[in-house]
Length: 351
Image (cartoon, rainbow, N blue to C red):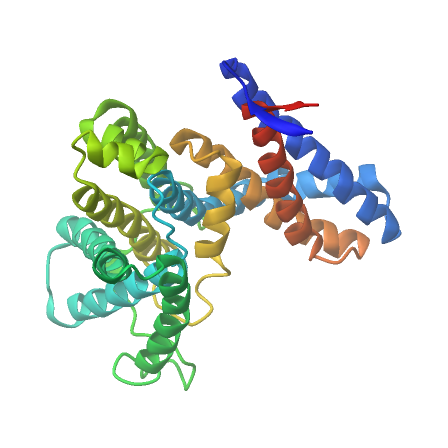
């Protein structure tokens, strides 16, 4: 048996295959729910209610999806050019810390007026995230160091650095001993899309960025060069594509998106930084990117699916006493099934 690349693939298969794969993953997860002693239809009904059954549920799902869209875009942009950015979690945290520091300074000394402060902090967060990814890229281009290892280990280094800063120079003296950073200025808080909920305009920014990334990838020379660098770097270099320059641009875009996620989370939800600010948004972004087949528009749908799974399972777990870890299993199974489905879309099995 061998795999043979298909001569042509109908575009509809690229949409139908991931949907079918997710259905298979949900069926397998249903078997695990049944083993836990719960009714599978009731479990999925409870999950749907927990994710979309009320105003609070819908807004919590969308709030959870907002950083996932940006970290998913960060992974999708990098992976498309074969820049293996596993450090979105670190880029998220370092940008969040920079946002809190600058936002706290604005609160203390009047750095900028309100209308300018929000975009300023977003740009600063994106810039800090981009700079953190440029360091591993420099090591790869200069010394051939594997960026997978460097970006992964940087996540732990950054988290320890954040812990040190919020226990030291950036500690909020009014937090009664709780380790958290200073608060950003109230003028830097993102406006709410729905009053009385946590849903903020960061969702609109995230969706807009997915459209921007799609335009860059499909309508610009840089997007074509990045795609060529991902498909075959040697052929792209032979054709005149400046691979190092393209990878620098990809790193700035990818790290900037992850950094923007950190800045938005601080300004839109928390208002300050703690070491549990992210429940794994950077790592979940990799899953989101793969579920979306690295498509920027598909990242939005994949983020909603992942967010709804985690938010919905919380309600299901409380109602039916099913372990909440079933959400991690469902997302992981979805990823594996999607990878298999996309492989079978691209290749056919030959005897």
